[in-house]
Image (cartoon, rainbow, N blue to C red; front, side, top):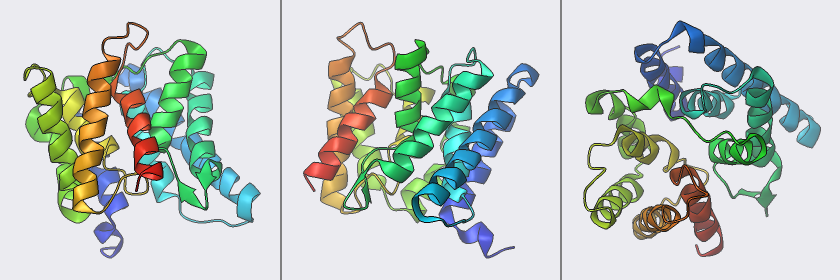
Length: 231
């Protein structure tokens, strides 16, 4: 039991559950149950279709929790299910040379927004205190050592925006949870700094286009492309 608690994905899942509990609204309980349930289901299904194997879907659990906290709370159950399916399909099938390209949660949320005209809501993090949102930093900053990506994103994003989002809970959650996803972000420190800076610059550029009601998720996907092809 205690050995499981040393796994970064499980640690992050527990922290995300704490964030959800602190933002809990009874009417949004279905978002957690549907997001986590369908993400785990589709992760197992895709893995079985691909390689006829079963495993404990810790990554699917984390992705489901992220979707539950970020998705538009007005999403209908089947829309949530499709977003989860898209996320897990990208994780299992959208690869080149066996390597991941895109952050799964970002893919699901972005495509869901396009298909259903359902921009990300960030409901579970927008009202949280900065202290609570710093908790995932234990995993991403310390355990996964992605501090280069996190710090470069926050510094560049704040500089380019005139420090208007210095304590913005959405940007902090994004930087500590979604940006440093280990399979789609670099481990090398110099590449981390480049990656975080690219995502920050992309977010600012996208903010000038009215079509993007949320800029962080598409900016992350663009950063994933740069990271994959310019390693």
